[in-house]
Length: 557
Image (cartoon, rainbow, N blue to C red; front, side, top):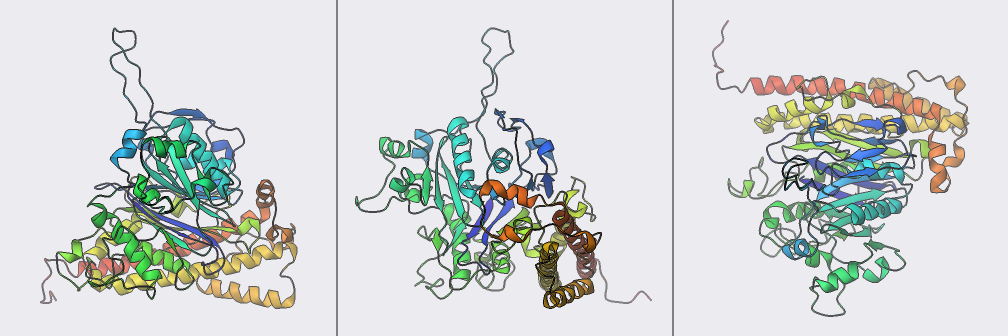
């Protein structure tokens, strides 16, 4: 599965949040309609069977509730992809990675072997299940962990036990940490804590470029790995370091070094870092420090300024604007404009940007920003993750094409705009900015209302601030107070901002009145999103219809 990931440490995000984000891109020639759902403990399987690999495993009997973005068509399994659980742990799974022949030979992928013959017949060989993969990861890990670090440990143990049939990168985050895990062969894995002062860019290739094995096999302060990784590396001659003092480089040892990386992968890392670090180095021309084909683009680096939600959306929507490689641009020529695989591609399924905000109570700490379809033509929309239901406009996607759900309406808009990019770009930009502004105002107003649950914001100054925000939201047809009776809002959540044990967080989050407020805000946001998206569809349909080849310039009147 082709995807692009960016991870933003809390010290360089605009508000001190941890932010993990990933485009889920479907395979070439395919579209995968998506749904945004809440999976309740009663809906979580206790015995799990993978559709693709047929691997089976029993799951614990105490799952947490969590959000997910599964496929609307379950013929290939769940593919939950991105979500937040009731412990405010987020997971994004997965970024498909590349490897090399030495790794595949040393630890082969665990692939499904079909049965031969029929049971009871001479020579019958039963089916041998494969390992776990992207279809399974979110479902079998996220409901059972209370910290990002626990997520790494659980997935790592499952990989060692069952193996995997593909190379994948997986992100975990909580309010304090972000961890990135990469599979290495069929049963091995490494994981590294994202530095708080850095961001990470990940196209579809193994990315970690420096790894402390002593830490991973010892204190595990910033590194973790499968238990026998050191022996695995030594026995199979995987360490390519020339000097004994050189830090171990997993990208050299476990990654790919193919010409196709220079077309498909490295250009994406180049553009993201070019945007976030424009002043650190030369990015363009013959004297560039890093070019789109550079193999040594850093896995993590400190940005030139703090990173916003809008920055994340921009880089994950990129079609290499301002370069000769933009397929919609006027720089370069027909060759350069189609030289590299873009980030914002036609077959995007969804984008999830998960923000865990340490300065808010546990109840409303997690926001899952969502976009469906091709990113250059869609908008990123905030939704609170710790609710009991999600709006139908995002949840009721089916395989039927219709403008009545967010996924297919975005698909229709993108197909129309592609043929008239210049003529529709202003309408797209206005839509994106308007939805973003409405979303930020919704979050501010809803956070204020949650704060009122225990009277934290009950003094007159806070009341005036809240009323101003509510009036602003109402002007955009957002009423975050729908169906909420302030006279009944009494639960005390003031202590939820203080540090608490991970095991205590789910109890704090299960606040019925807070969840009503958040669900009402999500629904109001979806209603406004639907109205604005309908208007955009009207506008671009008109514009592109006027460009049809069978038009004629004389009046029929």
